[in-house]
Amino acid sequence: MILLDGKKTSNHIKSEIASEVDKIIEDGGKRPHLAAILVGSDGASRTYVNAKVKACEKVGFHSTLIELPEKTSEEELIKSIEELNENDNIDGFIVQLPLPRHINEKRVIETIEPTKDVDGFHPSSVGKLALGLPTFISATPNGILELLRRYNIETEGKNCVVLGRSNIVGSPMSILMYQKAYPGNCTVTVCHSRTKNLKEFTLNADIIIVAIGKKEFLKEDMIKEGAVVIDVGIHRVPDASKKSGFALKGDVDFENVSKKCSYITPVPGGVGPMTIASLLSNTLKANLRI
Ligand code: NAP
Image: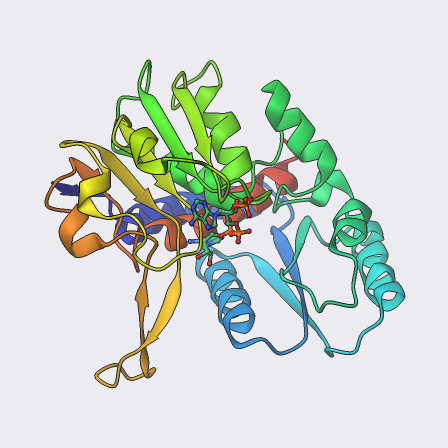
């Protein structure tokens, strides 16, 4: 079994981005600038946003964190987004999800200017992705593609099963895996909460991408020998031995599944760091207008 080391790979990508930033500055260009809007005080969201801001500093980007209170109205949030749309100093920005329940997420995403949509959630970005046109690919699926690419994992003609059909992970991931490209050219099956006999599909999969938000859902009796397993899930479980008081687990029963597969991403240190590296790559693209 080979570990798909997202931490190491993302550090390589960050060094490449940092060198590109140096070149931009040497050539008299503008330093890339990512902004993030965080509404409310959800602990996990704050951790993710802080990690993104820290990653910006590491590669030499400017970053701006806009923190809005939980009770911010939809109109106030829309106004903040419109200001970022107009601000030439900002190359790209994200609105950290989930948003408080009183805010219409769909309307918020549709307000983001597509040329600054570095999370790739705008319908225009998703539509282009589905057509195989250049666009911002949402960070988690893009990070997974990059990991498959950097480990030279064969995908052409393989059976790929994606567990989960969310707009931010499962759905774009499934589209990308059947595109006429590398990584891609797979025969893709998408499973979700209404799928019957899910195990029949996973047992037939060469590549399984698990994004269902259920701790250690994928067990070793659900995969075939030598499968490639990508674990997107993130779950905090209490762990007194950790400084933070919790450990992270994925959607895959890593301990047992890892004994049977050919490649696997760990949690933590797999898909999570690749997601952040992808966000930085998208921001660099926005800065370079590519
Ligand atoms: P989500 O929006 O909750 O979607 C979960 C999907 O899984 C849905 O399509 C749901 O089906 C399906 N599902 C739920 N239970 C199922 C079951 N028992 N059998 C089959 N399918 C089932 O989740 P998400 O936003 O995609 O996130 C998934 C996980 O990835 C979460 O743990 C999240 O924290 C993590 N995540 C990690 C990163 C990262 O950077 N590593 C990024 C994003 C998300 P229905 O559509 O039928 O409801």
